[in-house]
Image 1 (cartoon, rainbow, N blue to C red):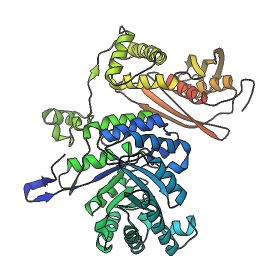
Image 2 (image 1 turned 180 degrees about the horizontal axis):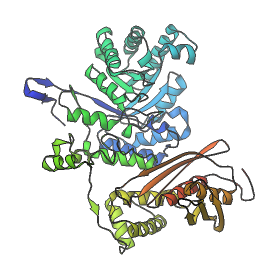
Image 3 (image 1 turned 30 degrees about the vertical axis):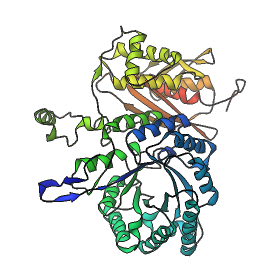
Image 4 (image 1 turned 30 degrees about the horizontal axis):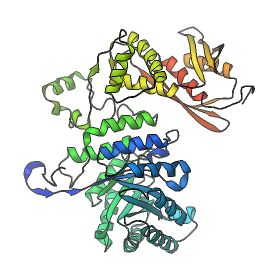
Length: 521
């Protein structure tokens, strides 16, 4: 654990550091992103990674919302011993009952309950009044305290709640027994100055505020989640609610890695954390892979380009002294750019060995898929690195056992020509071929697939991201399609971006269940 006493810049004075508790809600708020739902096994895996990072509190679900969420919280409660396991509920007794039951076996259980306190929520969400909301807030805390000693209360939309009323609510729920009061900027509306002032107002005007920890939960709708969180910390908040990679509802939540590394990098913050920062990149990649949600290349701390230098001036400066252009040592977050020496002449055993070194375990069927992809990639790329291997393994797992597979693809395009594509699909073991034109190679290829499938498929989103560097980049494609009002997601990766696009499209379509004899959907 880092010493609670550290020197500030200039060494003019000593500052006693207080602990900042890190509350991770990747498995609850982060998982609310459409298409990023996790199953119980995946949630348990991520919970163990968070515990290994020394996250103080893991909010792992909303038990009343579904049987699957209840089971996930229950299973995490059984295996996580060092971190507090937290379950969310509304200010409703049956919600609190479900949360309490789900975390019953947790070594360190916490119930997180609350209600909206802004006039927007009071009038338009609850059709109520301030006095009624205050009574419900007090009642839910008292009810939760019947189950656990550790109760956190959230004042939803606190960012837009009038400060005087918010202070009154906070005072009363502390009297009722909460250990943590959560002040969320639910809509991401506040500016750092405004949000910091709100936390200071509570510190100055709630007489019993010393009996509870102030938590802050900021959303990123205006791109200020991290700034607001840091402003709250500077004004007295001592729990930061965050997610890995900043994933979350709408524009996302405050990113764990940004808050933790800002505090580690700048010695003038009055707090420290217990987070083992060398686990950050591993956690980031696991969340990105399991949620099929790519990290933007220029994302702070964990983006592919976060420690990349293309300018000659920058390169020269970094070579002379890393700190000329890097304020963070890449090794501090567990970044490892070393290449793995694998060639097209390597066999399955060598591939399996290197995957094991990366803690990736595949079934024999998945290994066969991965090996075929590895050979194709090794023929087209100069070198195979860790990121390539992880992508190959992820694609193998994603595509193993799907009903429809791309068997053949030929695309003709170029300036002055009409793009044409011929595709052959393996549909439940039957080979089907079609040809189609289009506005471009991808559009033509998608048209050929639709001719074979003969289903009414609407493409809602198409995202391409390069994951390595150079003209032989391996690109990954995420697609979102709509059928009969339902959304399906597909993913693939390949050095041929058109092939990756079609494979991702087919991967999404394969998840649509229909009867073979149907001719249209």
